[in-house]
Image (tube, rainbow, N blue to C red; front, side, top):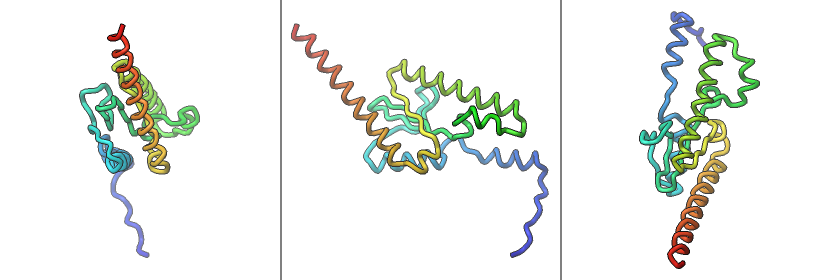
Length: 160
């Protein structure tokens, strides 16, 4: 094997390059979940801008908003991970805590609008895709049941 070529970039330049490659849309985990949903016949909107938080996947027929969250960016196991951040601690802790607060606020807004919110961690999508799909299918079934119950109530009011 040949020698590795030493990078001519500074640490700051390399970090800028790495961060510029991080996507906010069409991530690997989003695409994997979307393809699985599509193959199950579940149709959706992508990055639905008409809703708060612009969900990664919106199943408009059943009022289900789905977010595919990266573990680092959205603070999975934040209590223990927070202690391990070594570089630029104040920036990253502040940023991730703002992300967590924003996620909670978006969930509240969507629930107030009558939408069911599902959030999946990236590793769960990668390792347990079938369980994620089952959660979405359960949410669809729950939505159908709620709609039919509401219709039954409407009809029973007409009889009186």
